[in-house]
Length: 410
Ligand SMILES: [Fe+2]
Image (tube, rainbow, N blue to C red; front, side):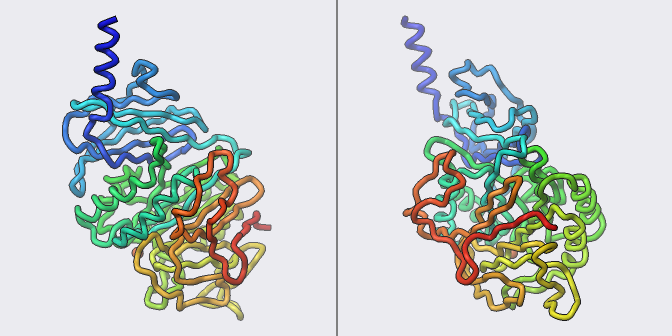
């Protein structure tokens, strides 16, 4: 009896004593079976990572995983555990043990590996250094129960230690009170001064930061590109091969930081992306959506194809049958800019703080633009409600409606 009490006391006493913070989960490959868990080891020695489909402490800590890698970047000691034998569509609980004790219990859900289970995502970027606003967006993340956040660059304004620490402190708001973490898939923006910083902080599987993740078996392939490096050569070759390899998937989505055609005048046109990325995107009937950021404004285009024909503008023309919808352009808290460069093929645009909320099923993709600033009034959805718009949520869509429905190209 005495021994039992002592054991219970030790377990309680060692709980939540681990000196770890900024715990994140990234999907960098097959989101149904692979996940990478990263945290900052503030001090003390790493002593074990335990993950299971139940609380690992209740299951006698049988599933222990080794540290895959660690690095120092921007004032943090980033500890990395890569796991590749996960069960699809399953909640995994994990604990980190260090020389001071155990961490709090965290959990996340792997993606399904079947195309008949719909998926949901939040897509956005440009959190920069406007903390009160970006915290509102962060607080809405756990409420929507999405499969992943697609975070497309410009995490910080200045790529220095202080701002990254503040970014991670604020990102803690995306973790639900019960320890539920929404996994991420990230790309680099121009405010991240090197590939290295994103590579090390998020364990991106390629040092040049172009890579792919799949969700839902052959339902969705997301290709993540790096708009801060050359668009020709190796990156173009990667894109060509990645899109061809997934040509029989139901859908492909591309994400990258800089928009091909910005909706803010002062931003330059990305001719290198127009010439090298767009023709490859357009080669595939299953790629109807590109997520863009950088401008600190909001836009959604009609489906468009590249064209120099009469009626085209800036190299694109509306084509409802074969076109690609380009959505995004910020703004996760960065200073807003007027959408003063709208095109004939712009569906709606305006200077509002927003992120995209995206549903993907075999039948269609639904995209909504969420005005997250009244986050406090928006209730949490439970997992079964994750495809219903909550009461109080404000959606962008001044002229052409709040729902952008994307059907397979003809
Ligand atoms: Fe940017």
